[in-house]
Amino acid sequence: MSHFFCFFGIFTTLDPLLVLIVDLTVGNFDCASQPICDVDLSADGCFCIEGDAFRLSILTAKQSNSSVIGILLTVAIYVLISALTAAML
Image 1: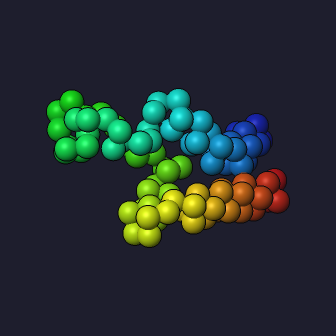
Image 2: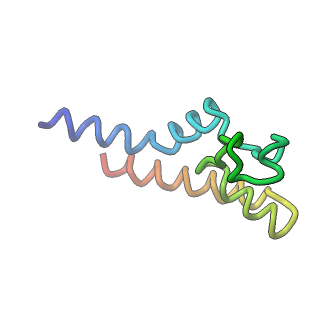
């Protein structure tokens, strides 16, 4: 049982990094660059979903024409979550 809690803590700490890796690997970013998704995200040929690692940057880009604040917030939140979970190990 203690191995379960140990691995749960390790992967909780690494979760933001793993989410980023999965989003980059699967291609869950820049849906607007795909022609079929640019017209309608619910189209049959559009399989693109904006990943969790990119949602704040997309939101701030739509509202203020700059995704820098969203990127900084995402990095800060991910670092904070990882630091808090690492401190609890």
